[in-house]
Length: 306
Image (tube, rainbow, N blue to C red; front, side, top):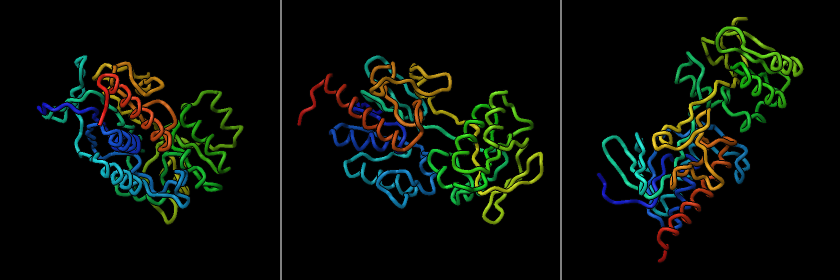
């Protein structure tokens, strides 16, 4: 076991974790940052709504720049998976397999993982994503499908909401059930009818890239679209917070106060793992608030002086 105790351990090195690392390192705090390398930001072919990049920026390039900036102040990303988190009332123990690390505070920036359509080959998935044929965030890139032929793979309230959102960019929107018939309330059906959104039954399968479109099988035959949006929900990576005794919402999001602190004193969370708008700008803003709250909490325990 590592007998040293850090001021803060950050779990996750996406936009939230890296922003927090930059702030905390510039506050002259002793920190560590563990990351398993699966930030959703790395999936982004080009982000066009991140302020300061008028021509857009690739997600991996943005992460590289942020890692470089954090490293400039001594905050290095350690490629390790955190397997458990405990709190004894005085300090936190962060477990990376058999290794243990102690910290006065912890910031969870573990994010979420989008559920993918079943039966889609990994290599094809990545190519479709890179080419904008498969998209996961209409808030990020709905503008890019203006007046295009778009499919939303989903059903129920979530599928309806995503299809309705994309309808503000194009008239040609089809909601396709991932498995069998749609599960739609009368209200959802009415909303879809009013918007002129076509519905097709599933199952979806036999995905392929055909020219400049993504094609797949539906109950109504094989269809091709300029872009397809899976609206299949996501896995919220809040299990470390649960293990530590922190409250989470029914959906699994970590519950925090205005300073991004959980109900476990000293445990903070920021980014997509917290309920709110899943956007890079939002995650970075939360991280700045959380990092400053951590600094202020630590200086209450012991004044921070040069």
